Image 1: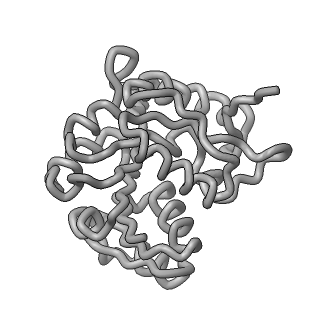
Image 2 (image 1 turned 45 degrees about the vertical axis):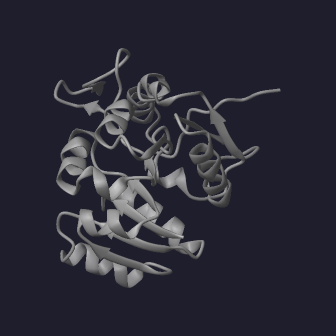
Length: 214
């Protein structure tokens, strides 16, 4: 597959490497594609990863991963233009985190969500919220003890969610727990401030909130 990853932070680089490690053709999109940091990343990365602008990455991918900071997500989508996402699976990993008061809260939530805003910005895309409730360190080949975890996802398109389930299993997860339409992001995104508070308390960022079933 051709995969475009919008965002070159920890999440974007991790997912780009994950897709490339599984043999996919990846273009990582950044505001600063020529930065020394990204050149160094490309030299060390395994597999087929190129680096370009946000628009170049969106146009490259048959699958597009949105992994910019939550407060930049809508501006990035506007800058690229909705036509670049039409008909594509868009995996939305973003969270509407607000650290202005110190401890994390959400800048949108419960009656709306960033996932829903993303879907409204690119109405012809098939948006699936995924990877947003785990750290970048656990996204690819998670290392928690015990049985392999399931990824929490939501989205409006059933076929797109099945495709995400295949990707998640390819990345080493047991599968997905589908909580419904994209409005389910109203309940997935609020898990993340809790996850941050737990990480601060536990002094680790490898922890995970997961569902255990009999």
